[in-house]
Length: 171
Image 1 (cartoon, rainbow, N blue to C red):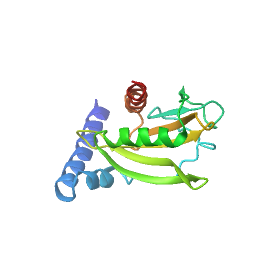
Image 2 (cartoon, helix red, strand yellow):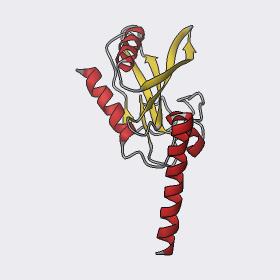
Image 3 (cartoon, helix red, strand yellow):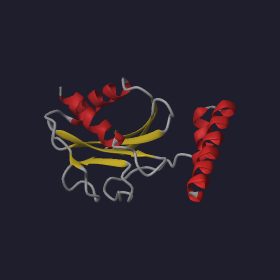
Image 4 (cartoon, rainbow, N blue to C red):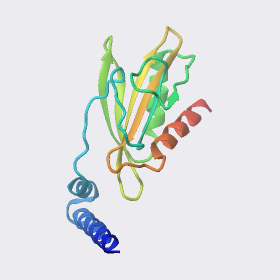
């Protein structure tokens, strides 16, 4: 019972810090003060190692990622530049996508992009890295790594996001 009271007090303290931070320095900065800043690092799918926590989801073509993918990527009967254009236009229309960084280049083309999408109410940031992969002149695929920055569980949000995106893009 004493531990429950201590835990409840600590939780209330964290919530208070977050609320005060959000009121004075903005929601996003308040989350950084309470939980730390977002670790921004370039993802290399070839050597990616998944964390032990379930707050991530990896979609990857067979034999492309070192880590075991949660789901294998579909193959599209479209050139990589068209696939990239379709996906980037689709993602631009998603709610709460705040940042986009072009990171990876292959033969002069930007084929890897990072996005941050925040939750609607608490504005927790999730990072989504997408790599477009040419398979031939008229076929391509992609790898997607979606992960949360705060907490250990995401209640399946990252998996749901990617499976919903795949479903909507196949319509």
